[in-house]
Image (cartoon, one colour):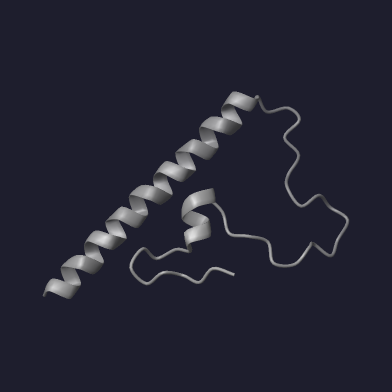
Length: 72
């Protein structure tokens, strides 16, 4: 399991895939992921890409802040 990196503030898994892994399977009978039958694939792809870009920018900001605090 990935641990949170102190410099980027998130796990490497989250940075690369945009979410944290599920450790245990759900105990209820609901689907693990929400159904997306009525949502177009291009909207889902755009949402995922936007989330990955946001996570990447957040990690870069966190690295810059860590670098600045280490230099001070």
